[in-house]
Image (cartoon, rainbow, N blue to C red; front, top):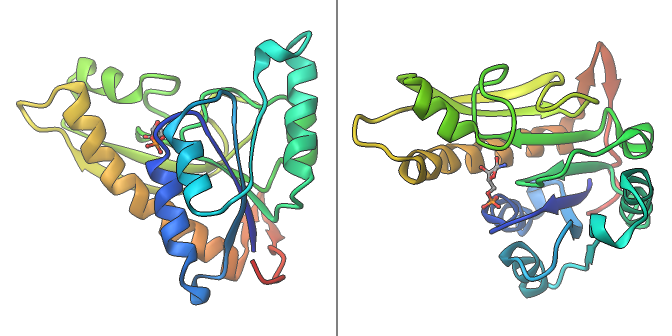
Length: 203
Ligand code: GRF
């Protein structure tokens, strides 16, 4: 299956997918990496792996809708079977969802529906939960909503700060993402009862 991965930061989730894809039995290939900003480690990781990259900055477009359309075009150019939002810090819009809804997954560092948005680990820590985790879901028009594909629970330690908690979550998250995307790539998946099979084209 052909994966396009969108990132906004360090790209350790992306790196986990890149590493998994080196095994032909995994059944997927990262065919492109996109970002909403330049100069991030996630793009450097793609370049080191020889994967084509693209950047679509919101500020380069007249408005959000134009950015959404441009992002959709950039992704479509790589003919993805599955789009993976891995630390992508923008909400995709109607143009994107019209094209890739139902075959776009997003990973979130909290146990949805708890703690949606940009600061899941910090919100979990502030709330005082003893267990948090990460969630992989099929993206819909909401913020960190959508059909849940996988979740992994992660304990909160008494001496955690946001960084230590988020690192522990990310360790679980990378494994969750690699496992779930591999299953989706090889076996397809169901969205609202509809079976989605991903292209079996090599990579
Ligand atoms: C991940 O925990 C992701 O869920 C969150 O930000 C983090 C991105 O980490 N949105 P990385 O860029 O994959 O290292």
